[in-house]
Length: 438
Image 1: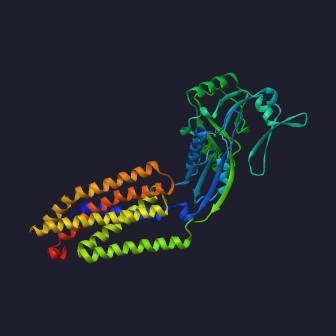
Image 2: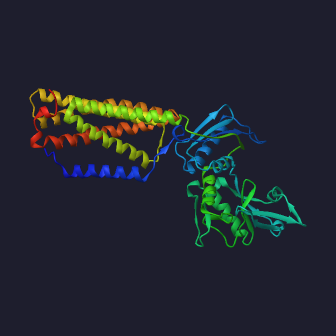
Image 3: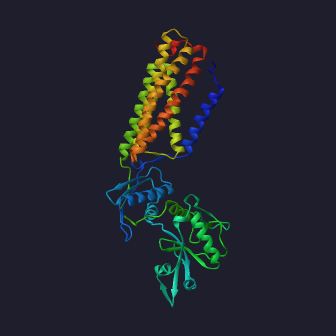
């Protein structure tokens, strides 16, 4: 058996290098308890056609989840409060006003044919924010937008959009646009309309406000289109794309509470938690080094690799680190140490039978593997159950615990094994008493 493996050494170096790169290049996201953020309470309101019930609340929560995910906010908390309210917590959000506006928007999209009688009376201008505003004038007086839209036949609605095909981008002239594709029913209705109405105006309406009113220059038969005009920046186009992807709200919502909060634990508590974590890990490392000497030192090296891997994976996945998440990491560190102890004790038993160090290491790892696998799988099952059925901080704990279990098994069985194989192959340290006190 070859204990010096260039391939394994190269793999280990690559793992450490990539982990260090991810940690330095991608900052970790911190939860509301560690970083602070925005807390909103949304009240759902009845309409003439729809009363708020459990199904409506569920649908609103799903739309809110889609919109928050579209904003790029990691580990948000969405929780039902009572019969007609939602609590939304957005950790580390930088633009609270933008989030509030987006969550309140109904996002009811309609494509309407502006009749000729109103087409000739349509005007538009650019307001202070750079947004294009449409209005209709008749005999020197502005006509209410609701009246014009009521007289405008509906062609298709936002429900005909294929959400996965909505994207914000620049057109060939460098102007921000939102591209979209229609489902089969919408594509047919859109094609029939454009064939019959070349030269007519098709208004794209969002929440009873015209955001674009292009003329139909030619039949559109492929079921694809663009929303242009009214976007000052690409970010504004991206905001509309997020709303359309998230879907429309079935009922209006009202922000009844909007608070910007700091870390819920307080800076002093966070500092004490970090100190406790450092002391705990240092104590474990010292115990391993004192009790197991050389193998303990190798196990500590494997734990360093474990820590780098965990931080790199969390950074790469853009996971949010919360205090329960830190607890999950520390718990998995203890489980990684426990796996090392099982392995070392198995090797000790093999050495007591008179086997050589190399044979004892090989047999010890093989005998310990089943025990380590069983203990970790049972814990992993519990973590998966927590992830599926729980929300908020408990879910974050389940995520870090699950990742920690998998990474700890890898470092204990693969990384630590490589270190022990490497050292046991050195002539000067083959004497078993330098490794284990038997």
